[in-house]
Length: 431
Image (cartoon, rainbow, N blue to C red; front, side):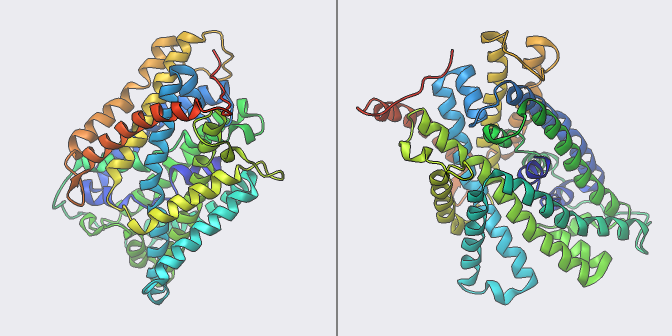
């Protein structure tokens, strides 16, 4: 569970390069310390209470539906799946990019597309085997992913390059831009909740998983950045994918190749983990009558909702060639709004179901349940103000996000017509 959650949230230190480039070493380390306190810790606490109190397949969809009603439950799933289109298109592209750094001829022409589709197919087969296979495989992939960074930390701390006294000043400082990227790198704590029906002893497992994964993510973010910061390497030289160049600078071509291979592993592990999470949503929505019943079909051997897995894989494969590399704001906004709905459901359930058994409880009563949602909301507002003019092509990402949100409301009322058809069985949320 910890290994799978690590891939879902992090997938390694990749993505931190742009924070260093935008804010410098000291600000990056401060952001990487403060963002989990304001964003990850509240989310992990919220997930721990709700996942241990309502350990059902579908996770956050069930929480919001039960706390706020079916309309908001539908919006929770819509925002998550819509955000997944922009996020899941990223990892096959990263996979191809890292292979291209190792062997450019392998990705030339249409070979890059074939490799990306092959990665999606591999992760689909991995998921069809079952959630336990995803968890066990994630442990091995975590070890392979983090070993090169352990070597990098050692070389940076004890090699000949340490102790350069003065780092070059930043050319263009962008603190809020760095915070947005950090939020994306610390996002995904709720995703493991959707497989709660497949987890042994979820009442005990989820709170331990959140704590263990949070510690692992923070350490593997801070340690390599802090080690390189001690050397004084120019932060202006950091770009997307810059860990490979950093590895080459400190450890030569062998370490650069190892970090590149780890990037390939990180893309596979993150895509596979997120696939396990997102593909449970169509299945539980079909059980509630919002989608055709065919999505509820499960493998008799593993219990995996195989129709949902294949349908989502086809959707993401169609979106993969579009790229969406510059749609970070869309992903953060849509996924962030779904997380805020979960915080509101936490407070609503404290009011509506005060006597519900809660193996883990956010301290502070109703006030505490409300208060832990305020820092994530403040971060969402700050990043939205900073990045409201980001574009996809010629269109503002904010405009696209608002259109997606409006479409979710329209689709809910359209789905009510589908549910009203003869022969469609529905499952009303418990009261």
